[in-house]
Image (cartoon, rainbow, N blue to C red; front, side, top):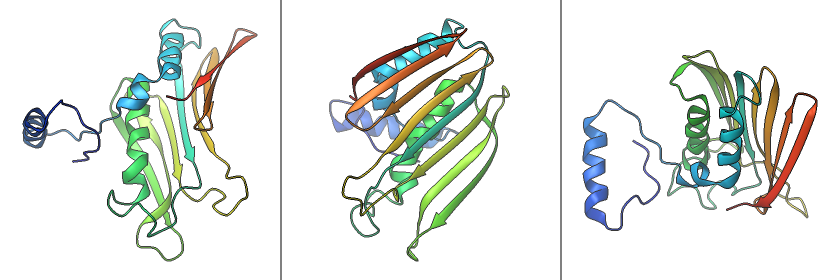
Length: 187
């Protein structure tokens, strides 16, 4: 079980939820932030309105400088467990389906015990393809630390694309020879 965010006003309802989850045959990941972000809601509406046609591919990338080994991830586990599980949940939410096939590769860097670069790709049961990349080794020592964080929802008639730098999110819709852009703060 993966447990990360508070779900109740006090501990008693949370422990009840833990007991229910442990008694089920489900793997649970909580991702309140992404499912409530304005940009994900806008993209979901765009997809639901048929603007991109049939959803075919979901690509999620979270590449940031992050912590070096022994600088902060050990209490939560390796980086993919700490952060990447959010994107496993986001891709599933966008596909509105269960994972069917996958291939994953994690690369250990600096001889550290856990992978710091993880990529997973595969399909959902409904045929939608997914590609997830999550790393914390993106320009650690750069004077200005870069970020490469995005979500692409690629359909048969268009694309909904979100990019963010942890300050500003930009959403771009491309369909039918038209495009539109929205900018706003990352929540």
